[in-house]
Image (cartoon, rainbow, N blue to C red; front, side, top):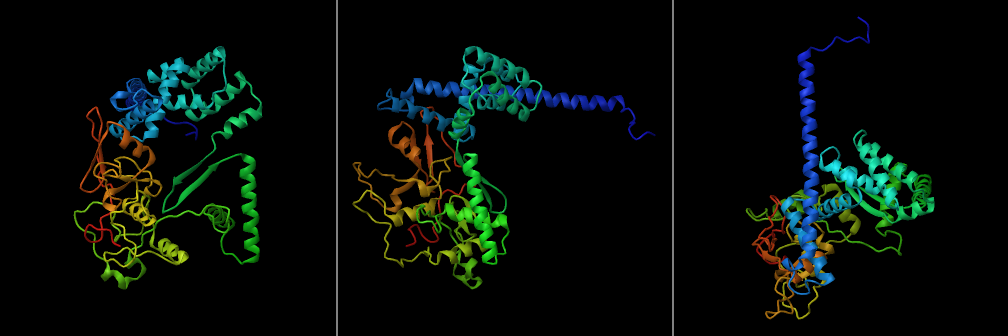
Length: 435
């Protein structure tokens, strides 16, 4: 038999494959239609909240600030109902608005299921300053393209098409691209993460050249065993953390290390996690509160590098008193550190902003009729956006026994605590701060 000759498949087998493929296509079309409809519903909901801000806001409802706050509340409710991030809610709503306004042909194709919302995102990313005729040409060409090519090819073609329809100087293109510069952290496996900076090519190349030169110097003069890539990564991280560069701001990261991870003999001194208590188990593994576990060797090395640490125990051994009624409204540095360690993230259901960057909110208002104290029992870490919502809207906040916070919206929807969420730190003994 010739190597390039294959027997014809039985007719029944071909029919089965065709049926399966056609079923997958129909499911894809239906999913595209549902995604477009959801985006439109979210856009309509946020627009309605902006037009009727009094649903969420009592005072200054019709002021620009009140309208923005009402939209923010609507985004929070949508994120809770759909188990999406707030950024995802805003992005989907924005896609529907832009699609209906600027890409009517492409958006109709998406609503019919023959393209995806990702195609619209690619079309928006490739846009140039068009006049009405150019915008129509761009929309029509992309609609035809979306039916025949992969999404990756669509992205490339969209950029090239925009440049042909509305040619722009390279300087203008670069200036627009520079507005998108940002920092992104993407988690990898085994306790590692990518730290990426989108910046100009010239600055990026110059930065890498400096790292390479320094790495080369170290490898020659200090008998380094690290590879060139490892040296560059370590040098870049050190520079960003302000090590060896007094002009840079020094940052702080909390790391908790159980005693038994430092010495096996210390295991007997560690009290087990209290059964039935929600929260972080500081006795079980080394943690970066609000981020996740870190391996024992890394945690021990961090402790050795730092040279000092704070013991978290149940008996008062320091002069720092955290749980006290203070006349000052501002939390102490020690209080902020303990609350960041205790909670990890903002306490509002669904918010994962770090507690170390949050405001310290008085649950019972400091300036209210009851004049709530500035102590641990009355302080909660709330990120800036959630802090503003708590004090100025009709959304009701309820503190659960585990100190996580439930929200009830004017529509009646209540947020839910995610199963297995770390919530709040279970104190190692009793209910008082271990200081």
